[in-house]
Structures are given as structure tokens and as C-alpha cells.
Length: 214
Image (cartoon, rainbow, N blue to C red; front, side):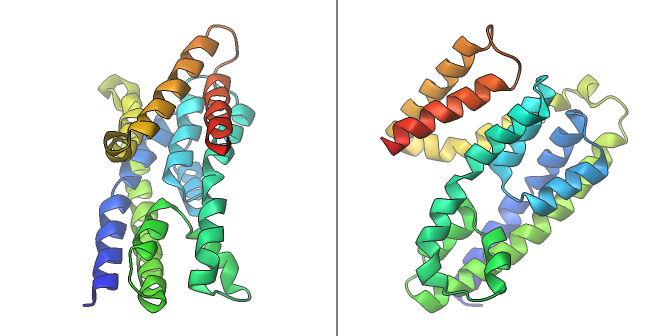
């Protein structure tokens, strides 16, 4: 097995297991099993999915939650611009490839030494992660829905905890990102008493985006 394939499978399987936490968080937030699975199938961007169900579980309306998730997922557009010349996908295949442009596939592809191995790494990471994420989402959603009231077991904390675990390695390694995260958290906390649930997360995302663009 070559390095690109090994890297892609390793990341795909390891990160894909987090889908179980998303399935549990989605059901706890009030989605049913089918809705949880469709969200993973169509959205397929973990941070945005956790942000959406987190806002909904906090009492936010669907519009504000969706806006925050879309804003957070907007970073994938920048990844796509970076990968377009490297992957050289043409025709209808571009729609499929676009679905796979996320943090993990971008990182593994850009870590490869040649365009050929980068394309292989992207494909393997995307395929393995997509399959694992959706399979474990189904498992997590089914298991949580069978419990009756997931909140009794504290499963309402699964989503935020997993979201933090995904972000923590980056926050630990880059002081600039820690500053942005703390600033965003401060904006959300200050806005919470004055705006409807779900809007504080959206406001903090807008502020962080403006700082990054500046």
C-alpha cells in the first residue's frame, strides 16, 4: 500500500468514527434518524453539522442555525480554489469532487509530494471518510433514538464536546486561532441575553470571518 492510500485511509477511518457522535447529537437536538442521516449525506462537513444541531438544541430557530452552518462551511470554497488546479477534475465529476472538499481531504492532498499522489490521497480520503461518517451517523442516531430521552444520560453534551475535540489540536498549536476562538466566544456570550437562541453563534462567526478577511 502506497503512502497516499495509507494516509487517506488512516484519516478517513479515524475521523469518520466521529459520525457516531454527530448522530447522537442530532437525535438529542430533536432530529429523527432519517433527518440525521440525510444531513450527513448532503452536508458532509462535520463542523457545520455540529454547529447546526448545537444551535437547534440550544433553542435557536432553523434559519439562524442554518445561516451559521453555511457561514462556517464557507471555508470549503477557499479549499476548492486551492485544490482546483491540483486535482484537475473536469465535467460532471466536479460536482462529486466538490462534495469531498473539506478540511481532512484538503490537508491530506496538500501534504503529498506530487500532483498524482495528491489526487489519489484526496480520492481515498474522501471515499473512506464519506462511507465511515455516514455509517457511524446511522449507528449513533439509531442507538440514541432507542434510549428514549438521551438527555437523561447527558448525551446532550456529546455534540459540543466532540466539536471542541475536533478543534482542539489546531487551537493548541496556533496562538492566533486561540485568540480568534476566545474573541468569538466572548461575542456569543455578550449577545446571548439580548438576541434569540442561535443568533449569538451566527454573530460570533460573522465577527471572526471579518477579522480573518481583514
